[in-house]
Image (cartoon, rainbow over all chains, first blue to last red; front, side, top):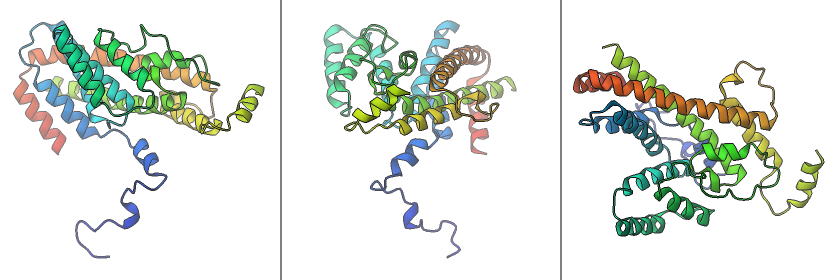
Length: 196
Length: 92
C-alpha cells in the first residue's frame, strides 16, 4: 500500500450501480450537514429588506423547507414535492396564462414517476394554493395490509399521498432524518447568534 | 394473522413482502426519539406510525418556533459579522 495522502480507491469501494446494495447504501446515507448549512445560509442571506417580523418568520420557515429539499437527493419524492410547492407558491403571483405555461413546462420536465397521474394532479392542486398535498383530493385507495394510521402519515409527509405504502415508509424515514438535521442546524445557528 | 397469511398467498405478483415492510417499520422505530429508552423491542406497526406522526408534527412545530426566534435574532444582530462567525465555525 503506498503512503500517499489520498490512496486510490479500491475497486469494491466505488459505488457501482449494478450492485444490488448500491441503492441501499445511498438510501441509508444521512443528509449532508454542510450542504444543508450552505443552502440554508444562502437563503438566509437573501432575506435582507423584509421588515415585519411575521413576514420574515414565514420567509425563514419556507427557506428552511426549501433548503432542506435542495440539500436532499432529487431522487426523494418528498424533496421534489417540497420544491414543487415552493415553485407553485411563487407562481401564484403570475397571471393565469403564465401559470399555465409554467405548469406545462414543469410537468413536461419532471422525471417520470411511478404514480404520474397522482403527481400531476398534485402539481395542479399545489398551484391552486393548497399547501398540504392531500387536503382537497381524495386519497388513493388504501392498499392491502396498510394500517389506517398511514393516512395521517401521508398527509404529514410532503408528496406522500400518491405513494405506495412501501415507498411511503422509506420517504418518511428520510424526511425524518432531514427534518432532524434541519432542526439541529437551526438550533445551532440560534445558539451562535445569541452568543455574540 | 389470518389476513396477512391470505394476503401473502395471493401476492405472487407483488414484489413487496411482509418482511420488507416490517424491516422498514423497524427502521422507522429506530429513528424515533424513544427508541433509545426502550429495549429496542419491536413495537406494533400501528404504534410506530402513530409515534412517527407525532414526532413529525412536533418537528414541524419546532421548525416554526425556531424560525420565529431566528427572525427576531436576525432583526437585532448585524448580519455580516454573524455570517463571518458562522462560516468560520463551519470551516474549523
